[in-house]
Image 1 (cartoon, rainbow, N blue to C red):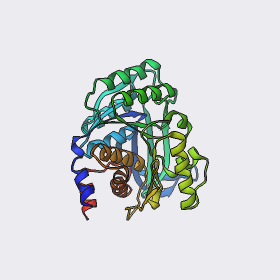
Image 2: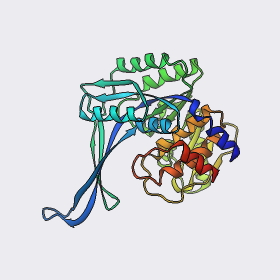
Image 3: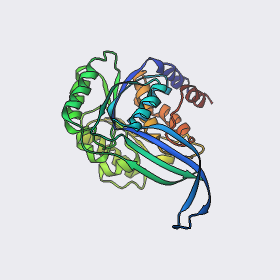
Image 4: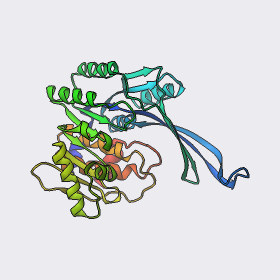
Length: 321
């Protein structure tokens, strides 16, 4: 634990670029006291409305609250939701210079209606067409101007930002500048990810990427090993209430038990994990140490409602205690 704390104490020195699908999360929170006479649905009496950064922006928010320097790249629509997004990002201290505003796009927004602490409904606004090639080229140009980058995280939600061509260019860029390239993946884009440094699927994504149904530790190890070998990269699989598993070439798999004592909301937990692992790796951690630190962060995240990030002080406290 002393070693882990020493690594976490180096977090403020890391600069990480996050590129991917940007989202705005809205929470409509209220009480349910009766059923509608118009249809068999609950009536939510609204008490509060909250907005939060989602998708790739939640990864950047976690980097920022862990005292890292987050540089965010992606696309927003020229609309009110986009303006709200910029306001939230600036409040978190995220560098938004890499965000492109496109009048032809709609800012991706996910609206969750919550009553009695239960999610009752989700409404999505999104345009999942792939972005124009010139925008991808602009992202690469902006990355090349950041001489102190230690890592690039690709947060892929398959909403149109991450294409095969962009991933190819990011791989060339990261190798040329000796920058770690870490992917929070979507299974449908599996072929994009070969020869990167690390991929961090959850259990469902890992099963889809490998074609292996996980029902035991043995099948989990086959699943992780197959992804590792096919993509020629390290793999960390998050396995919900069982923790996470680490797969590296020429090493035995490492299984880390969960640190979560209570689970209120798992949304955004993957964002917290990939942000924390990345911060740990650029601070000198081994991949297993980075996963152990991220496991503490995930345990903190799932105790929070919504895509709430984890803060450096509470991560230190969790490891210490």
